[in-house]
Image (tube, rainbow, N blue to C red):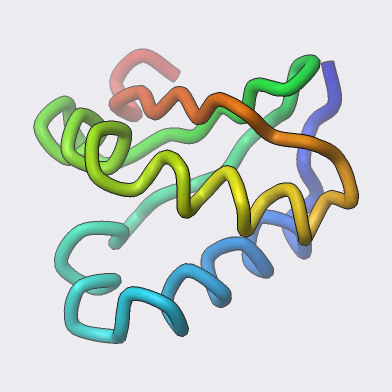
Length: 86
């Protein structure tokens, strides 16, 4: 298991913001934290259960591609959990 650095977390966030646009990013991704990678699974925390589910359902492949690029490591699965489970 590898904990992401703040720079890696912010790099993924910045690239996602550039792809989905500021309005969508602010609405959907506000407060997200990309936390750690285990094997090819990336774990992230979102502000609540509904947002976590929405991000996982709608943006997982995109996040996986961006994270793979930032981390120089294959990411196949993105698991997004609500911050209350942190």
